[in-house]
Length: 174
Image 1 (cartoon, rainbow, N blue to C red):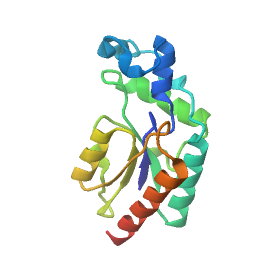
Image 2 (tube, rainbow, N blue to C red):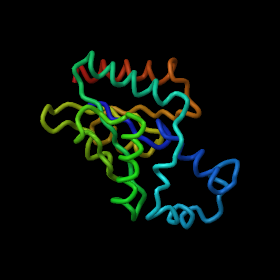
Image 3 (spheres, rainbow, N blue to C red):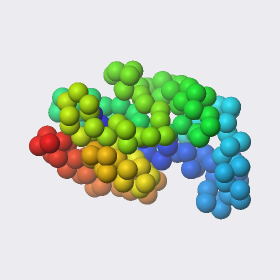
Image 4 (tube, one colour):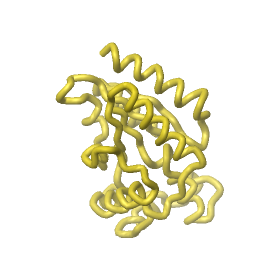
């Protein structure tokens, strides 16, 4: 299984946060925990823009998964303390952008991504593409294959697609 994170990979979460709070970089937001908590019970995750490369990422991952007989899905963290609401709006966002994986059960919304690092049926490592180094580290420590990628910083072709090719090779030999 190849899992894609949403925020930072296909959804411009940080750009949306910067716009919402009128700052040039999200880390300059005062009282970030309070500001992020204000997003609870809103449709904020439905309003996040795509990256210019989002469709290319989805298309490529879908093609790679199909050609290697691997499933693909979404593994995204909901807002802490707002799991059901933010997961609902993330699902709606995926639906409206035609980014829903072929199997609906492959859309996972959890703060514990590392629990999906291993395919329990095939006993093979799953692949996660995520922008947060901590998520990648936990994923790898749980036995998965991790690729750290941030759409607004990393090159799509030279980095993400090349790293995915390496990850598929590791997956095949696992």
